[in-house]
Structures are given as structure tokens and as C-alpha cells.
Length: 75
Image 1 (cartoon, rainbow, N blue to C red):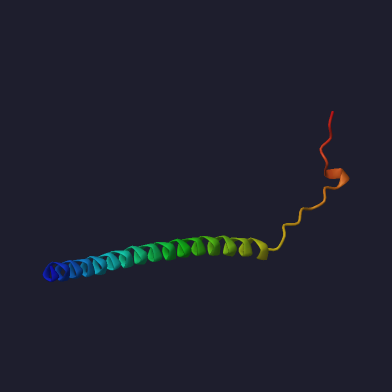
Image 2: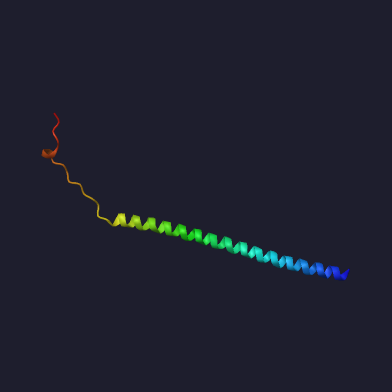
């Protein structure tokens, strides 16, 4: 019986090692996916921020006041 229990213990140890390895791969994949998502969001927000700053840095457009003589006359 001792021989069987040793074999079983070795098999269980190998199984646990394999399971930890698979869990590690899954965790690594999730980590990389999350980092990629953060990079994409950061790039999108940076683009929006730069566009807003470009618009804000432009001088405001001034419209000329329409004088009384330049107004259209209605009949």
C-alpha cells in the first residue's frame, strides 16, 4: 500500500504543479490584457486632451459688429 500512496502523492504533486502553471499563464494573460486596455484608453484620452488644448490655444474669432447702414432692408 505504501507504494500506491507514494505514486498517488507524486501524481498529485505533479497535478498541483501543472495547475499552478496554468493559473500563472491565465493570470499573465489577464494582466497583459488589462495593461493593453489601459494603454489604449490613455492614448485616446491624450488625443482628446491635445485636441482640446489646440482649440483652446487658438485666439477667439471676433465678429465685426454690423452697422446700421450694413443691415439688409426689408420691403
